Image 1 (cartoon, helix red, strand yellow):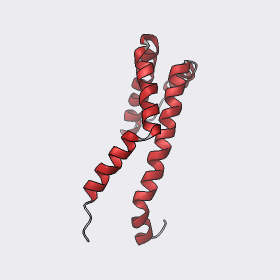
Image 2 (cartoon, one colour; image 1 turned 90 degrees about the horizontal axis):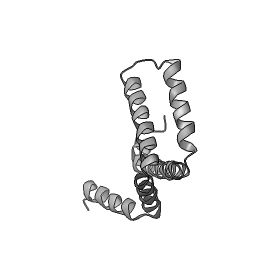
Image 3 (tube, one colour; image 1 turned 90 degrees about the vertical axis):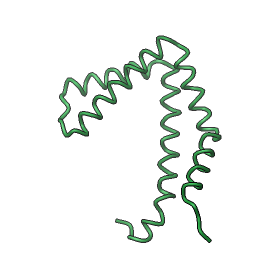
Image 4 (spheres, one colour; image 1 turned 45 degrees about the horizontal axis):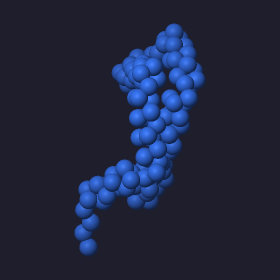
Length: 115
């Protein structure tokens, strides 16, 4: 019996979209985007995150000032209730994706051994 992995992946994608966790994340995202102040704050926070990640991926060292700015922005963002709920929903979805990744990688781990 041959299995098409891409069909299975598409089925998993549909299941994720139908999950309560994804629907909750989607609702939290819509709430943030419906509030102009929260949206602006969240967009600014995400831009700072992306810039720092890109800099790290390029092998550049982050300055103390950049780290402090990111931490201050994160603290400010978390004070906004809508953004805080969105970030909690993102974290939950990220945990689920991580768990799914462990399940997906299990055959390779068994084949090669746990390193």
